[in-house]
Length: 581
Image 1 (cartoon, rainbow, N blue to C red):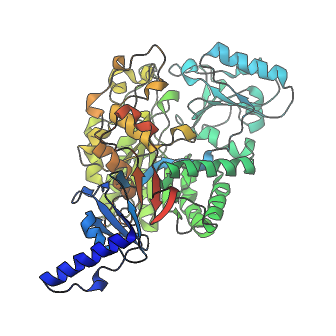
Image 2: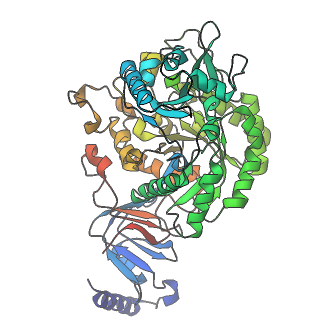
Image 3: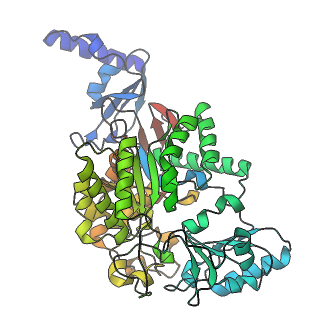
Protein backbone atom coordinates (compact mmCIF):
# COMPACT_ATOMS: atom_id res chain seq x y z
CA UNK A 1 0.00 0.00 0.00
CA UNK A 2 1.57 3.34 -1.02
CA UNK A 3 1.71 6.47 1.08
CA UNK A 4 -1.04 8.26 -0.89
CA UNK A 5 -3.54 5.47 -0.28
CA UNK A 6 -2.52 5.29 3.39
CA UNK A 7 -3.09 9.03 3.82
CA UNK A 8 -6.45 8.75 2.11
CA UNK A 9 -7.49 5.99 4.50
CA UNK A 10 -6.30 8.01 7.48
CA UNK A 11 -8.34 11.02 6.26
CA UNK A 12 -11.42 8.82 5.81
CA UNK A 13 -10.97 7.35 9.28
CA UNK A 14 -10.67 10.79 10.87
CA UNK A 15 -13.78 11.97 8.99
CA UNK A 16 -15.75 9.00 10.31
CA UNK A 17 -14.57 9.69 13.86
CA UNK A 18 -15.58 13.35 13.53
CA UNK A 19 -19.01 12.38 12.24
CA UNK A 20 -19.64 10.08 15.18
CA UNK A 21 -18.52 12.25 18.08
CA UNK A 22 -16.20 14.95 19.41
CA UNK A 23 -13.18 15.83 17.29
CA UNK A 24 -9.87 14.41 18.51
CA UNK A 25 -7.09 16.95 19.06
CA UNK A 26 -4.47 16.24 16.33
CA UNK A 27 -1.75 17.10 18.82
CA UNK A 28 -2.75 14.02 20.84
CA UNK A 29 -1.48 11.75 18.07
CA UNK A 30 1.28 13.58 16.24
CA UNK A 31 2.80 11.91 13.22
CA UNK A 32 5.44 9.32 14.07
CA UNK A 33 8.86 9.00 12.50
CA UNK A 34 8.26 5.36 11.61
CA UNK A 35 5.23 3.06 11.65
CA UNK A 36 5.54 -0.70 11.22
CA UNK A 37 2.37 -2.72 10.63
CA UNK A 38 1.12 -6.21 9.86
CA UNK A 39 3.62 -8.00 12.09
CA UNK A 40 3.57 -10.70 14.74
CA UNK A 41 5.17 -8.68 17.51
CA UNK A 42 6.14 -10.58 20.67
CA UNK A 43 6.43 -7.74 23.16
CA UNK A 44 7.55 -9.61 26.33
CA UNK A 45 5.07 -7.30 28.08
CA UNK A 46 2.84 -9.50 30.23
CA UNK A 47 -0.11 -7.10 29.97
CA UNK A 48 0.07 -7.11 26.15
CA UNK A 49 2.12 -10.14 24.99
CA UNK A 50 1.41 -9.75 21.28
CA UNK A 51 0.84 -6.80 18.98
CA UNK A 52 0.48 -6.15 15.28
CA UNK A 53 2.03 -2.71 14.85
CA UNK A 54 4.26 -0.13 16.47
CA UNK A 55 4.93 3.56 15.96
CA UNK A 56 8.32 5.11 16.73
CA UNK A 57 9.23 8.75 17.36
CA UNK A 58 12.52 10.20 18.55
CA UNK A 59 13.88 6.70 19.03
CA UNK A 60 11.07 5.54 21.33
CA UNK A 61 7.89 3.53 20.97
CA UNK A 62 4.87 5.84 21.00
CA UNK A 63 2.32 3.19 20.07
CA UNK A 64 2.06 -0.59 20.41
CA UNK A 65 -1.13 -2.20 19.19
CA UNK A 66 -2.98 -3.10 16.03
CA UNK A 67 -2.40 -1.79 12.52
CA UNK A 68 -5.64 0.19 12.51
CA UNK A 69 -4.58 2.14 15.56
CA UNK A 70 -1.12 2.71 14.12
CA UNK A 71 -2.63 4.41 11.09
CA UNK A 72 -3.36 7.53 13.13
CA UNK A 73 0.40 8.01 13.59
CA UNK A 74 1.11 8.16 9.87
CA UNK A 75 1.87 11.64 8.57
CA UNK A 76 3.26 13.09 5.42
CA UNK A 77 6.88 12.41 6.39
CA UNK A 78 6.33 9.13 8.28
CA UNK A 79 8.36 6.16 7.10
CA UNK A 80 6.17 3.07 6.87
CA UNK A 81 7.09 -0.62 6.78
CA UNK A 82 4.84 -3.60 6.13
CA UNK A 83 6.20 -6.47 8.22
CA UNK A 84 4.28 -8.97 6.10
CA UNK A 85 3.54 -11.24 9.06
CA UNK A 86 7.12 -11.55 10.22
CA UNK A 87 7.97 -11.99 13.89
CA UNK A 88 9.31 -9.05 15.87
CA UNK A 89 10.83 -9.27 19.35
CA UNK A 90 12.67 -6.91 21.70
CA UNK A 91 16.41 -6.34 21.34
CA UNK A 92 18.51 -8.95 23.12
CA UNK A 93 20.63 -8.41 26.24
CA UNK A 94 23.79 -10.51 26.62
CA UNK A 95 24.35 -10.58 30.37
CA UNK A 96 27.97 -11.81 30.40
CA UNK A 97 30.58 -12.08 27.69
CA UNK A 98 34.12 -10.91 26.86
CA UNK A 99 34.44 -8.69 23.78
CA UNK A 100 37.67 -7.15 25.06
CA UNK A 101 39.54 -10.44 25.43
CA UNK A 102 39.26 -11.43 21.80
CA UNK A 103 42.60 -11.08 20.04
CA UNK A 104 44.58 -10.44 23.23
CA UNK A 105 46.18 -13.88 23.43
CA UNK A 106 48.35 -14.50 20.38
CA UNK A 107 49.66 -18.07 20.32
CA UNK A 108 52.72 -19.39 18.55
CA UNK A 109 51.51 -22.98 19.08
CA UNK A 110 47.88 -23.90 18.44
CA UNK A 111 46.94 -27.53 18.89
CA UNK A 112 43.54 -29.16 18.59
CA UNK A 113 44.77 -32.46 20.08
CA UNK A 114 42.44 -34.12 22.55
CA UNK A 115 44.85 -36.70 24.00
CA UNK A 116 48.26 -36.47 25.66
CA UNK A 117 50.36 -38.19 23.03
CA UNK A 118 49.03 -36.05 20.19
CA UNK A 119 49.40 -32.85 22.18
CA UNK A 120 52.99 -33.61 23.17
CA UNK A 121 53.77 -34.51 19.56
CA UNK A 122 52.47 -31.10 18.44
CA UNK A 123 54.72 -29.38 20.99
CA UNK A 124 57.77 -31.37 19.94
CA UNK A 125 57.20 -30.69 16.25
CA UNK A 126 56.86 -26.97 16.85
CA UNK A 127 59.97 -26.82 19.06
CA UNK A 128 62.08 -28.57 16.45
CA UNK A 129 60.93 -26.24 13.69
CA UNK A 130 61.20 -23.03 15.74
CA UNK A 131 64.39 -22.79 17.83
CA UNK A 132 64.89 -19.72 20.00
CA UNK A 133 65.05 -18.35 23.54
CA UNK A 134 62.06 -15.99 23.83
CA UNK A 135 58.67 -16.77 25.39
CA UNK A 136 56.50 -19.34 23.64
CA UNK A 137 52.75 -19.20 24.16
CA UNK A 138 50.54 -22.11 23.21
CA UNK A 139 46.99 -23.38 23.25
CA UNK A 140 45.25 -25.58 24.18
CA UNK A 141 46.28 -28.44 26.45
CA UNK A 142 43.31 -30.83 26.75
CA UNK A 143 42.07 -30.60 30.33
CA UNK A 144 40.02 -33.78 30.04
CA UNK A 145 43.15 -35.77 29.17
CA UNK A 146 45.23 -34.45 32.06
CA UNK A 147 43.00 -33.62 35.03
CA UNK A 148 42.08 -36.46 37.36
CA UNK A 149 41.02 -35.22 40.76
CA UNK A 150 43.99 -33.38 42.27
CA UNK A 151 46.33 -34.78 39.61
CA UNK A 152 47.13 -32.79 36.51
CA UNK A 153 49.91 -31.86 34.08
CA UNK A 154 53.54 -31.72 35.17
CA UNK A 155 56.32 -29.38 34.05
CA UNK A 156 58.76 -32.28 33.69
CA UNK A 157 57.01 -33.30 30.47
CA UNK A 158 57.47 -29.80 29.08
CA UNK A 159 61.07 -29.50 30.25
CA UNK A 160 62.00 -32.48 28.11
CA UNK A 161 60.95 -30.50 25.00
CA UNK A 162 61.63 -26.92 26.16
CA UNK A 163 64.51 -27.23 28.66
CA UNK A 164 65.55 -23.55 28.64
CA UNK A 165 62.89 -21.60 26.78
CA UNK A 166 59.92 -20.27 28.85
CA UNK A 167 56.67 -21.91 27.77
CA UNK A 168 53.13 -20.80 28.69
CA UNK A 169 50.28 -23.13 27.71
CA UNK A 170 46.61 -22.24 28.08
CA UNK A 171 44.20 -25.10 28.73
CA UNK A 172 41.13 -25.98 26.70
CA UNK A 173 39.02 -24.59 29.55
CA UNK A 174 41.07 -21.33 29.70
CA UNK A 175 41.02 -21.27 33.52
CA UNK A 176 44.24 -23.30 33.85
CA UNK A 177 47.80 -22.87 32.62
CA UNK A 178 50.75 -25.21 32.29
CA UNK A 179 54.24 -23.76 32.62
CA UNK A 180 57.66 -25.31 32.25
CA UNK A 181 60.50 -24.71 34.72
CA UNK A 182 61.97 -21.86 32.67
CA UNK A 183 58.63 -20.05 32.70
CA UNK A 184 58.28 -20.43 36.46
CA UNK A 185 61.75 -18.93 36.90
CA UNK A 186 60.95 -16.02 34.56
CA UNK A 187 57.83 -15.19 36.58
CA UNK A 188 59.56 -15.56 39.93
CA UNK A 189 57.45 -18.50 41.09
CA UNK A 190 59.34 -20.92 43.32
CA UNK A 191 58.79 -23.27 46.22
CA UNK A 192 58.40 -20.35 48.63
CA UNK A 193 55.70 -18.62 46.58
CA UNK A 194 52.39 -18.31 48.39
CA UNK A 195 49.20 -19.25 46.57
CA UNK A 196 47.27 -16.03 45.85
CA UNK A 197 44.05 -17.67 47.11
CA UNK A 198 44.22 -21.38 47.91
CA UNK A 199 42.52 -23.56 46.69
CA UNK A 200 41.19 -21.41 43.82
CA UNK A 201 44.01 -19.21 42.51
CA UNK A 202 46.98 -21.45 43.18
CA UNK A 203 50.29 -22.97 42.06
CA UNK A 204 49.69 -26.71 42.13
CA UNK A 205 52.17 -28.84 44.04
CA UNK A 206 52.60 -32.61 44.05
CA UNK A 207 52.47 -34.78 47.16
CA UNK A 208 56.06 -33.82 48.03
CA UNK A 209 55.34 -30.09 47.80
CA UNK A 210 57.13 -29.65 44.47
CA UNK A 211 55.65 -27.16 41.98
CA UNK A 212 54.13 -29.02 39.04
CA UNK A 213 53.74 -26.02 36.75
CA UNK A 214 49.94 -26.30 36.81
CA UNK A 215 48.66 -22.79 37.59
CA UNK A 216 44.98 -22.14 38.23
CA UNK A 217 42.64 -19.18 37.82
CA UNK A 218 43.84 -15.73 38.96
CA UNK A 219 47.24 -17.11 39.93
CA UNK A 220 47.85 -17.27 36.18
CA UNK A 221 45.82 -14.26 35.06
CA UNK A 222 47.92 -11.91 37.17
CA UNK A 223 50.82 -12.52 34.76
CA UNK A 224 48.94 -11.94 31.50
CA UNK A 225 50.11 -8.37 31.10
CA UNK A 226 53.71 -9.52 31.69
CA UNK A 227 53.83 -12.11 28.93
CA UNK A 228 51.10 -11.03 26.50
CA UNK A 229 51.83 -7.88 24.55
CA UNK A 230 48.73 -6.73 22.68
CA UNK A 231 48.95 -6.41 18.94
CA UNK A 232 46.70 -3.34 18.65
CA UNK A 233 45.83 -3.91 15.01
CA UNK A 234 44.73 -7.51 15.59
CA UNK A 235 42.98 -6.69 18.85
CA UNK A 236 41.00 -3.73 17.52
CA UNK A 237 39.98 -5.57 14.38
CA UNK A 238 38.89 -8.53 16.49
CA UNK A 239 36.85 -6.39 18.91
CA UNK A 240 35.07 -4.71 15.99
CA UNK A 241 34.23 -8.10 14.52
CA UNK A 242 33.00 -9.37 17.89
CA UNK A 243 30.68 -6.39 18.40
CA UNK A 244 29.45 -6.61 14.82
CA UNK A 245 28.65 -10.30 15.32
CA UNK A 246 26.66 -9.56 18.46
CA UNK A 247 24.80 -6.73 16.78
CA UNK A 248 24.01 -8.75 13.65
CA UNK A 249 22.43 -11.39 15.90
CA UNK A 250 20.20 -8.90 17.68
CA UNK A 251 22.17 -7.93 20.78
CA UNK A 252 21.53 -4.32 21.82
CA UNK A 253 23.19 -4.39 25.26
CA UNK A 254 26.09 -6.37 26.69
CA UNK A 255 27.79 -6.81 30.04
CA UNK A 256 31.55 -7.21 29.76
CA UNK A 257 32.70 -9.98 32.12
CA UNK A 258 36.21 -8.54 32.45
CA UNK A 259 39.46 -7.88 30.64
CA UNK A 260 42.11 -8.79 33.21
CA UNK A 261 44.65 -5.94 33.21
CA UNK A 262 43.92 -4.85 29.65
CA UNK A 263 40.94 -2.67 30.52
CA UNK A 264 42.49 0.63 29.48
CA UNK A 265 43.29 -0.73 26.03
CA UNK A 266 39.80 -2.16 25.67
CA UNK A 267 37.80 0.78 27.01
CA UNK A 268 39.98 3.36 25.34
CA UNK A 269 39.18 1.76 21.99
CA UNK A 270 35.47 1.44 22.80
CA UNK A 271 35.34 5.10 23.78
CA UNK A 272 36.86 5.95 20.39
CA UNK A 273 34.19 3.88 18.68
CA UNK A 274 31.40 5.64 20.56
CA UNK A 275 32.75 9.10 19.76
CA UNK A 276 32.92 8.11 16.10
CA UNK A 277 29.34 6.79 16.18
CA UNK A 278 30.56 3.25 15.54
CA UNK A 279 29.66 1.48 18.80
CA UNK A 280 26.71 -0.69 17.68
CA UNK A 281 25.25 -1.51 21.11
CA UNK A 282 25.08 -0.47 24.77
CA UNK A 283 28.19 -1.64 26.57
CA UNK A 284 28.56 -2.13 30.34
CA UNK A 285 32.23 -2.16 31.30
CA UNK A 286 33.66 -3.54 34.52
CA UNK A 287 36.61 -4.02 36.84
CA UNK A 288 37.47 -7.67 37.48
CA UNK A 289 38.31 -8.98 40.97
CA UNK A 290 40.23 -12.19 40.33
CA UNK A 291 42.34 -12.10 43.52
CA UNK A 292 41.21 -10.94 46.98
CA UNK A 293 43.42 -7.83 47.09
CA UNK A 294 41.89 -6.48 43.88
CA UNK A 295 38.71 -5.79 45.86
CA UNK A 296 40.53 -2.84 47.41
CA UNK A 297 40.98 -1.14 44.04
CA UNK A 298 37.62 -1.91 42.46
CA UNK A 299 35.59 1.18 43.31
CA UNK A 300 38.41 3.62 42.51
CA UNK A 301 39.09 1.90 39.19
CA UNK A 302 35.41 1.95 38.22
CA UNK A 303 35.24 5.66 38.95
CA UNK A 304 38.38 6.20 36.87
CA UNK A 305 36.89 4.23 33.98
CA UNK A 306 33.73 6.33 34.15
CA UNK A 307 35.65 9.56 34.03
CA UNK A 308 38.11 8.49 31.35
CA UNK A 309 35.92 6.45 29.02
CA UNK A 310 32.24 6.73 29.96
CA UNK A 311 29.60 7.91 27.49
CA UNK A 312 25.96 7.43 26.65
CA UNK A 313 26.46 3.86 25.42
CA UNK A 314 29.69 2.90 27.24
CA UNK A 315 28.98 2.90 30.96
CA UNK A 316 30.47 1.50 34.15
CA UNK A 317 28.03 0.40 36.85
CA UNK A 318 28.80 -3.21 37.76
CA UNK A 319 31.95 -4.74 39.29
CA UNK A 320 32.89 -8.36 38.51
CA UNK A 321 34.00 -10.79 41.25
CA UNK A 322 35.27 -14.36 40.93
CA UNK A 323 33.93 -16.24 43.94
CA UNK A 324 35.40 -19.59 42.85
CA UNK A 325 36.90 -21.36 39.83
CA UNK A 326 35.58 -24.15 37.59
CA UNK A 327 34.94 -27.87 37.89
CA UNK A 328 37.25 -28.80 35.01
CA UNK A 329 40.30 -27.86 37.09
CA UNK A 330 38.65 -28.80 40.42
CA UNK A 331 38.62 -25.22 41.74
CA UNK A 332 34.87 -24.82 42.15
CA UNK A 333 33.71 -24.12 45.70
CA UNK A 334 31.65 -27.20 46.59
CA UNK A 335 29.63 -28.15 49.64
CA UNK A 336 30.83 -31.75 49.22
CA UNK A 337 34.23 -32.88 47.86
CA UNK A 338 34.71 -33.79 44.22
CA UNK A 339 34.02 -37.47 43.70
CA UNK A 340 37.52 -38.13 42.34
CA UNK A 341 39.29 -36.11 45.05
CA UNK A 342 38.25 -37.10 48.59
CA UNK A 343 40.98 -34.83 50.05
CA UNK A 344 39.57 -31.78 48.29
CA UNK A 345 39.60 -28.57 50.32
CA UNK A 346 36.90 -26.02 49.42
CA UNK A 347 36.83 -22.27 49.92
CA UNK A 348 35.66 -19.10 48.23
CA UNK A 349 37.57 -16.04 47.01
CA UNK A 350 36.02 -13.86 49.72
CA UNK A 351 34.48 -15.05 52.95
CA UNK A 352 30.79 -14.38 53.57
CA UNK A 353 31.78 -11.64 56.01
CA UNK A 354 34.21 -10.00 53.58
CA UNK A 355 31.65 -10.10 50.78
CA UNK A 356 28.99 -8.65 53.09
CA UNK A 357 31.30 -5.76 53.91
CA UNK A 358 32.11 -5.24 50.24
CA UNK A 359 28.41 -5.15 49.37
CA UNK A 360 27.84 -2.50 52.02
CA UNK A 361 30.68 -0.49 50.47
CA UNK A 362 29.04 -0.87 47.06
CA UNK A 363 25.74 0.27 48.58
CA UNK A 364 27.42 3.45 49.78
CA UNK A 365 29.22 4.00 46.48
CA UNK A 366 26.17 3.09 44.32
CA UNK A 367 27.65 0.23 42.31
CA UNK A 368 26.23 -3.16 41.35
CA UNK A 369 28.00 -6.55 41.58
CA UNK A 370 28.24 -9.49 39.17
CA UNK A 371 29.68 -12.69 40.66
CA UNK A 372 31.19 -15.75 38.96
CA UNK A 373 29.93 -18.82 40.84
CA UNK A 374 30.25 -22.44 39.76
CA UNK A 375 29.94 -24.57 42.90
CA UNK A 376 27.04 -24.81 45.32
CA UNK A 377 29.16 -23.49 48.21
CA UNK A 378 30.02 -20.38 46.19
CA UNK A 379 26.33 -19.87 45.41
CA UNK A 380 25.28 -20.27 49.03
CA UNK A 381 28.03 -17.92 50.22
CA UNK A 382 26.93 -15.15 47.86
CA UNK A 383 23.31 -15.49 48.91
CA UNK A 384 24.31 -15.50 52.58
CA UNK A 385 26.38 -12.35 52.08
CA UNK A 386 23.55 -10.54 50.25
CA UNK A 387 21.11 -11.50 52.98
CA UNK A 388 23.50 -10.24 55.67
CA UNK A 389 24.17 -6.96 53.84
CA UNK A 390 20.47 -6.35 53.26
CA UNK A 391 19.73 -7.02 56.90
CA UNK A 392 22.31 -4.45 57.96
CA UNK A 393 21.46 -1.78 55.38
CA UNK A 394 17.68 -2.13 55.27
CA UNK A 395 15.12 -1.76 52.52
CA UNK A 396 17.02 0.81 50.48
CA UNK A 397 19.90 -1.60 49.76
CA UNK A 398 21.28 -0.33 46.45
CA UNK A 399 23.35 -3.00 44.65
CA UNK A 400 21.73 -5.19 42.06
CA UNK A 401 23.60 -8.45 42.55
CA UNK A 402 23.80 -10.98 39.72
CA UNK A 403 25.48 -14.38 39.67
CA UNK A 404 26.90 -16.06 36.57
CA UNK A 405 27.17 -19.70 35.42
CA UNK A 406 25.65 -21.50 38.44
CA UNK A 407 26.67 -25.01 37.47
CA UNK A 408 25.50 -26.45 40.78
CA UNK A 409 22.99 -24.96 43.21
CA UNK A 410 21.81 -26.71 46.34
CA UNK A 411 18.01 -27.14 46.14
CA UNK A 412 17.61 -25.29 49.43
CA UNK A 413 18.89 -22.16 47.67
CA UNK A 414 16.55 -22.22 44.66
CA UNK A 415 13.94 -19.96 46.24
CA UNK A 416 16.47 -17.54 47.72
CA UNK A 417 17.29 -15.92 44.38
CA UNK A 418 13.76 -14.55 44.08
CA UNK A 419 13.49 -13.75 47.77
CA UNK A 420 16.75 -11.77 47.80
CA UNK A 421 16.42 -10.22 44.34
CA UNK A 422 19.64 -11.82 43.06
CA UNK A 423 19.72 -12.34 39.29
CA UNK A 424 20.87 -15.70 37.94
CA UNK A 425 22.77 -15.50 34.65
CA UNK A 426 23.20 -18.75 32.72
CA UNK A 427 25.20 -19.29 29.55
CA UNK A 428 22.44 -21.23 27.82
CA UNK A 429 24.55 -22.69 25.02
CA UNK A 430 26.50 -24.61 27.69
CA UNK A 431 23.34 -26.47 28.71
CA UNK A 432 23.69 -29.31 26.27
CA UNK A 433 24.89 -32.64 27.61
CA UNK A 434 28.54 -33.39 26.84
CA UNK A 435 29.48 -36.95 25.99
CA UNK A 436 31.88 -37.41 27.66
CA UNK A 437 31.30 -34.69 30.22
CA UNK A 438 34.58 -33.05 31.35
CA UNK A 439 33.17 -32.30 34.81
CA UNK A 440 31.23 -35.52 35.40
CA UNK A 441 34.13 -37.46 36.92
CA UNK A 442 34.48 -34.81 39.58
CA UNK A 443 30.81 -34.12 40.21
CA UNK A 444 29.53 -37.69 40.20
CA UNK A 445 26.21 -38.81 38.66
CA UNK A 446 23.78 -36.96 40.94
CA UNK A 447 25.43 -33.56 40.74
CA UNK A 448 26.27 -33.83 37.05
CA UNK A 449 22.61 -34.70 36.31
CA UNK A 450 21.46 -31.53 38.06
CA UNK A 451 23.63 -28.82 36.54
CA UNK A 452 22.44 -25.38 35.42
CA UNK A 453 18.98 -25.53 37.04
CA UNK A 454 17.52 -22.47 35.31
CA UNK A 455 13.93 -23.77 35.30
CA UNK A 456 14.04 -24.33 39.04
CA UNK A 457 14.93 -20.67 39.55
CA UNK A 458 12.31 -19.45 37.06
CA UNK A 459 9.71 -21.49 38.94
CA UNK A 460 10.75 -19.80 42.18
CA UNK A 461 10.33 -16.28 40.74
CA UNK A 462 14.03 -15.72 40.18
CA UNK A 463 15.25 -13.16 37.64
CA UNK A 464 16.95 -15.56 35.22
CA UNK A 465 19.07 -14.06 32.43
CA UNK A 466 21.25 -15.46 29.64
CA UNK A 467 24.62 -14.81 28.01
CA UNK A 468 27.20 -16.04 25.51
CA UNK A 469 30.33 -15.88 27.72
CA UNK A 470 32.97 -16.51 25.08
CA UNK A 471 35.18 -14.79 22.56
CA UNK A 472 34.78 -17.27 19.70
CA UNK A 473 32.53 -15.72 17.11
CA UNK A 474 30.75 -18.94 16.17
CA UNK A 475 29.10 -19.33 19.60
CA UNK A 476 28.02 -15.73 20.23
CA UNK A 477 24.55 -15.97 18.68
CA UNK A 478 21.77 -15.82 21.29
CA UNK A 479 19.75 -18.07 19.00
CA UNK A 480 22.29 -20.84 19.67
CA UNK A 481 21.59 -20.31 23.37
CA UNK A 482 17.85 -20.32 22.78
CA UNK A 483 18.06 -23.64 20.90
CA UNK A 484 20.26 -25.40 23.44
CA UNK A 485 18.32 -24.00 26.39
CA UNK A 486 15.09 -25.24 24.78
CA UNK A 487 16.27 -28.71 23.71
CA UNK A 488 19.03 -29.28 26.28
CA UNK A 489 21.08 -30.66 23.38
CA UNK A 490 23.85 -29.20 21.28
CA UNK A 491 23.24 -28.69 17.54
CA UNK A 492 23.18 -32.07 15.88
CA UNK A 493 25.99 -31.20 13.49
CA UNK A 494 28.25 -30.82 16.56
CA UNK A 495 27.77 -34.46 17.46
CA UNK A 496 30.03 -37.28 16.33
CA UNK A 497 28.98 -39.00 13.11
CA UNK A 498 27.93 -42.16 14.94
CA UNK A 499 26.06 -40.36 17.74
CA UNK A 500 22.31 -40.72 18.08
CA UNK A 501 20.85 -37.57 19.66
CA UNK A 502 18.01 -39.62 21.12
CA UNK A 503 20.51 -41.68 23.13
CA UNK A 504 21.90 -38.62 24.93
CA UNK A 505 20.24 -38.13 28.30
CA UNK A 506 18.34 -34.89 28.67
CA UNK A 507 16.83 -33.43 31.85
CA UNK A 508 13.22 -32.99 30.71
CA UNK A 509 12.29 -30.54 33.48
CA UNK A 510 15.11 -28.20 32.49
CA UNK A 511 14.11 -27.96 28.83
CA UNK A 512 13.05 -24.33 28.92
CA UNK A 513 9.90 -23.08 27.18
CA UNK A 514 10.56 -20.41 24.57
CA UNK A 515 8.61 -17.84 26.57
CA UNK A 516 11.05 -18.17 29.47
CA UNK A 517 14.10 -18.09 27.23
CA UNK A 518 12.93 -14.94 25.46
CA UNK A 519 12.12 -13.33 28.80
CA UNK A 520 15.61 -14.19 30.06
CA UNK A 521 17.28 -12.76 26.96
CA UNK A 522 15.28 -9.52 27.06
CA UNK A 523 13.46 -7.93 30.01
CA UNK A 524 15.22 -10.02 32.66
CA UNK A 525 18.61 -9.20 31.18
CA UNK A 526 17.65 -5.53 31.13
CA UNK A 527 16.69 -5.81 34.79
CA UNK A 528 20.08 -7.34 35.61
CA UNK A 529 21.80 -4.32 34.05
CA UNK A 530 19.43 -1.76 35.61
CA UNK A 531 18.07 -0.95 32.13
CA UNK A 532 14.56 -2.40 32.49
CA UNK A 533 13.01 1.07 32.43
CA UNK A 534 14.59 1.69 29.02
CA UNK A 535 14.77 -1.59 27.10
CA UNK A 536 13.86 -5.29 27.27
CA UNK A 537 10.23 -5.14 26.13
CA UNK A 538 8.21 -3.46 23.41
CA UNK A 539 6.17 -0.87 25.30
CA UNK A 540 5.30 2.76 24.82
CA UNK A 541 7.93 5.19 26.14
CA UNK A 542 10.70 2.60 25.97
CA UNK A 543 13.61 2.79 23.56
CA UNK A 544 12.69 1.38 20.16
CA UNK A 545 15.03 -1.61 20.26
CA UNK A 546 13.70 -4.58 18.32
CA UNK A 547 14.52 -7.40 15.89
CA UNK A 548 12.66 -8.50 12.81
CA UNK A 549 13.02 -12.23 12.18
CA UNK A 550 12.53 -14.13 8.97
CA UNK A 551 11.33 -17.15 10.96
CA UNK A 552 8.83 -17.31 13.79
CA UNK A 553 10.59 -18.88 16.77
CA UNK A 554 7.33 -20.43 17.92
CA UNK A 555 6.87 -22.27 14.63
CA UNK A 556 10.33 -23.40 13.42
CA UNK A 557 12.03 -26.74 14.03
CA UNK A 558 13.80 -26.14 17.36
CA UNK A 559 16.92 -27.89 16.09
CA UNK A 560 17.37 -25.17 13.45
CA UNK A 561 17.11 -22.14 15.75
CA UNK A 562 20.87 -21.72 15.98
CA UNK A 563 20.95 -20.81 12.29
CA UNK A 564 18.56 -17.87 12.69
CA UNK A 565 19.85 -14.38 12.01
CA UNK A 566 17.57 -11.33 12.20
CA UNK A 567 16.39 -9.71 8.99
CA UNK A 568 16.81 -6.34 10.70
CA UNK A 569 18.11 -5.03 14.02
CA UNK A 570 16.87 -1.67 15.30
CA UNK A 571 18.27 0.23 18.29
CA UNK A 572 16.95 3.55 19.53
CA UNK A 573 14.72 3.68 16.47
CA UNK A 574 17.63 3.45 14.02
CA UNK A 575 18.35 0.52 11.73
CA UNK A 576 21.66 -1.00 12.85
CA UNK A 577 21.77 -4.18 10.80
CA UNK A 578 19.90 -5.60 7.83
CA UNK A 579 17.13 -3.92 5.87
CA UNK A 580 13.35 -3.50 5.72
CA UNK A 581 11.28 -2.64 2.69
